[in-house]
Image (cartoon, rainbow, N blue to C red; front, side, top):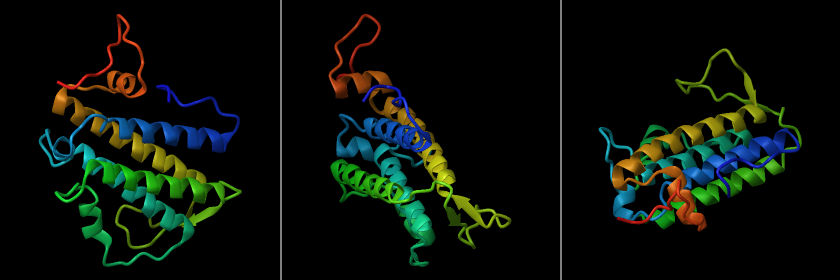
Amino acid sequence: MPGMPPPAGDEREALLGYLAQYRYVLRLTAYGLTDAQARTAPGPGSLTVGGLIKHVGFVERQWMDTVRQRRVDPTEGQDAYARAFQMDATETLAEVIAGYEAATNETDSIIASIPDLGQAVPVPRGVPWFPEDVDAWSVRWVLLHLISETARHAGHADILREAIDGGTAFPIMAAAEGWPATPWLQPWRPT
């Protein structure tokens, strides 16, 4: 996949194209990392590349539960949210990425089944960061939110990755996709 989303013929294609691009660059931050490196929190906080990928998959599942109005076990709440940021010692990076891809495939399938992106998505009540004065979002709004959430965390993961081994976005993409070396861009190589 190139470094930019593809041209789009309509709104749905554009939204899904941008979401796919940011998902891809988030996954790329893990390219070439070991499980231990994916669990490494090189910054002042506890964020890790593996934890961010796991979190974004969790978020997509939650939003698709909201779109489909599926009931979620209320006991999951805060504990599940906190666990979703952690790639625990029993998980491999490959498992975390596979879980993320399963979540993205489910999202794509659900969105494909909805003919109108203007379809109402009721705002769940009792979530502190959700507005009390809004009754519903649209599926379109949910997609835009997923794009912004994924892009935000892809940026976090870029910073973490660079702190782990010096790898940055385009050299990593060049290595993953087999781009030839040029005078201005050398594919990433493990140190």
